[in-house]
Image: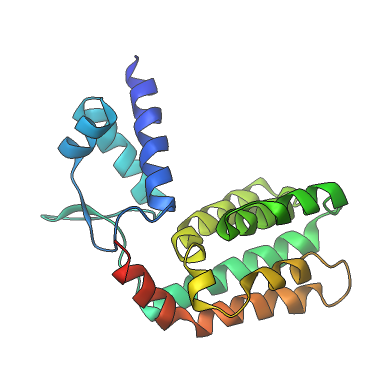
Length: 197
């Protein structure tokens, strides 16, 4: 396996684990241990960790190494606010709307967090700006560990997904309501995330 392939494999595996919330906030990500887990040398794992630092999925600090980000309530609210702005911009600039069959397929995905990711991916695909699509994907990946916990914290998160896809003028209002509900639930989501093993 080439060095590039080893780095891409390490990056993909680690990104998936972070997205799934496999490690608790503040968990130290040791390159040597991860290299053993992934069956590669330490260098590609370090490269993958630095790449994930650039994507804000990992934090690095001098003397403490790499660790899973510890979001504060304000930080989580800011992330939801950023995601809301990106989704709104994507839907306003999209020249086309997702096909009904694609919408139904996205809504049917399980678990709920995957359906949410699929819906936002559909909404992002229509945006003509590549940077906007990538920023929306990154924000969604950073929110994914919290999406996994929504069914335990929010009353009926699935119902809101259908509203997000309406073509009516209520669309932007539905996007805002969706994000405000999660911003209000930030303390409960953070508690659930911290207590998850």
